[in-house]
Image (tube, rainbow, N blue to C red):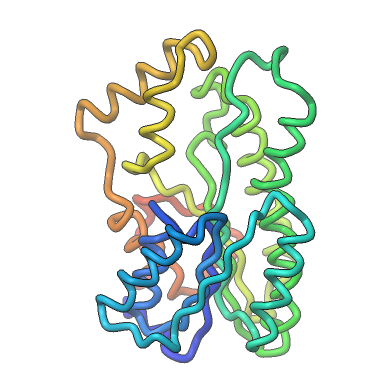
Length: 259
């Protein structure tokens, strides 16, 4: 399936590294104007440089630094992006795996922060860009989820992550049902086991905090070479994004319609 997004504007959160960066590079390569959002300006500038290196014109790239955990920064970022026109494609990729640890030891404030970043921020950005998509009669929203939503018991001491990703998928399916027939699709994507900075960070955590079982599972996946590259995962998503599915929970093994 062709993935030609020329003339479309795509907003990608968490675009400074890993899967978000790979998605941004893929969308830029497919002709989209890309808006890169993340906390760390230096990482966003690295993504911009990579886009320029693959031939994407400077005017097709915009960098918007913002901390999505902060409602005010989130609102200002959305307003700044929309001041340039509507967003056609929104990829909600930014997320946190924290807090990790025994559930009884997790402060309520840390749990709230996880929901703010992993659920409230994607929902809020979607609400901000949705009117423009509906007016145009076309839009694509993708929420990057995780296989943990299908198997919550597989990540003991990752209760917050499991709960937030399950909530994100419920939000996705419900919103897709609300918007069915409008030309705006909403889907979730489980990107698979990807070799990212988050994976590396978990491998180095104190087993007293996150549990030896969790740390060793992540270490084994890396040692066994079972992790895929961000580019591989992003390429699957882009092929799926070109279709008209809505309300789906895609994963990296999903075959695009018509493929």
